[in-house]
Length: 444
Image (tube, rainbow, N blue to C red; front, side, top):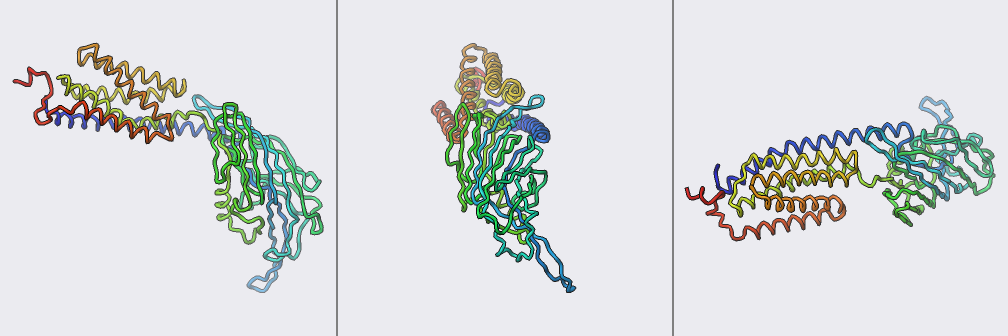
């Protein structure tokens, strides 16, 4: 076996290239398990309701106008005049629940929401196209619910003192296309200028609840005992209290923060543009699971090459300073063991949680490699030295996985410190004359 350190470094590079195959297989295993988890989320969402978005309510008043077609015939065309509330206040509570199939837990919630506010009296005097006949008796109030099967029980709306039940179905208003609607009784051009409304809805959904800022002034207040919320959407929360006992969050969205007009007609609306504006304006909360084992394992695998290289560098330092030769096959066994660590981590985490799985997988890997290293070097002292070095490496990896916001900083500092340590330990090595192996064999 060539005792040149540069030839052996080239062999280690070849070993590292071979180890890319099991690491790629690990990525495929993680992807397969993640896909299966997502299938379970989809199945449970199909049963209890998916991620929910509440839109509106929207007051819809149909009217008609006349136009002449190219053949000269007069046609009557029906149009919807849509109005958003002048004020909108939503308050509610989310009760979380863990459901799952096999090894895949999914967070669902039951939300009790109270929605109230007021509309202004519809003014169709300046509607485009001009209204010739206003069908006040066909007016409706529409509430957008992205997945209506999550509505837990029948409910109604009180508008201007009249209570009407909601029924399935909603007009495609641009801002939303699924939901429920209720008839509006007693609406007319001579009615009051202020039309107050109030409704309560019980809704089941999966993980995420969002709101569309429908009012000229929109306020939302949500509480829940779930301690791991992620606030999403364009507007920042006005007030947020998050702790072990849950969260209490409020938003306030002014008129200019929503991105779409308070009134529009179905004749002139651009559905694609309105849907894009609505999607950009939604905000809400996601009930996050504290540790997603698949995301954490994938992040760990991303550091695999770096940590295998570090381990091989540690072993190579023993070759330089300890007058011992490590066979490339032995390097290959060490690398394969470190690859199996990630498979152990994933399989154990599905049963025992990520933290316990990490400790168990790291302990098994460190113990095996330490004993193997003591047999290679024929010394118990080397076992404890290698065990300490590997324990420090796996402890450092766990720190990187936990410090999400500072992972890059901690990683770069750790890599710099490792490089500095290697340079310090090899500062007296004469690389031109260095030959590895026992002194007797180098004199031959």
